[in-house]
Image (cartoon, rainbow, N blue to C red; front, side, top):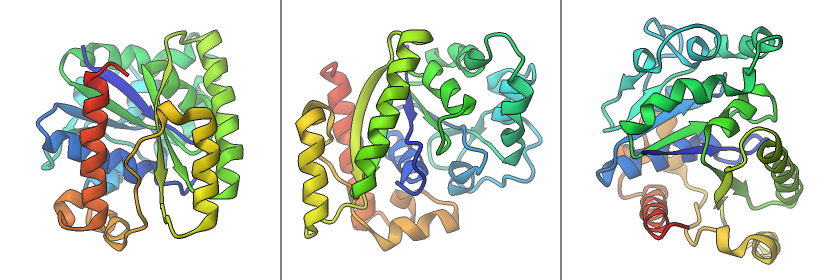
Length: 257
């Protein structure tokens, strides 16, 4: 059975979709079967893998949540050794459409369940909010991976997210656990960065990844070319960091963390 990991943080601009695309791609490059589900109406993971958001004729996450489409129909086999279930702005209407539906928080879990036998890892790129879409992601997931930018307000956002995870655990998904906390846009020369790291280690030392993701021009450029950074520039610091993270991620999962 494959593992389902939600990548979530209600704060935007923390490197969530960047992590979803590049960690998925690097894990696939290490020989694992990987599916990425873009659960964000902005569709950054979709375009980041070179898929047009405008012409999703064969299906998308929206059809899985609001229609009767089977997940297999929506899967796109990308040229980056990994698969994708794409998203576009249609998904923003899903929240309103699902308001009166029964078990609305479990729509994604029901759709994804048959796929866990086909993949080693299924990643869900959640939107930067704590709405019904993110709740669907958390209900479908076994664990949550949290990208965290090294800044003052990051800790406040982490506290809110932890509260949401606790509520989800108590009401919908009792087995939901923290996969890990990833520091993004990391600059070890800044005092603020070191203060944030110190504070996180106080509470989440065992969950904090050793690997950190630096600010990197190539990481910023790669999405505009529709490529994961390990294909865009494998020698860049950003690509090396995500490959290190992929290795650490797989190692932790082998150890059963």
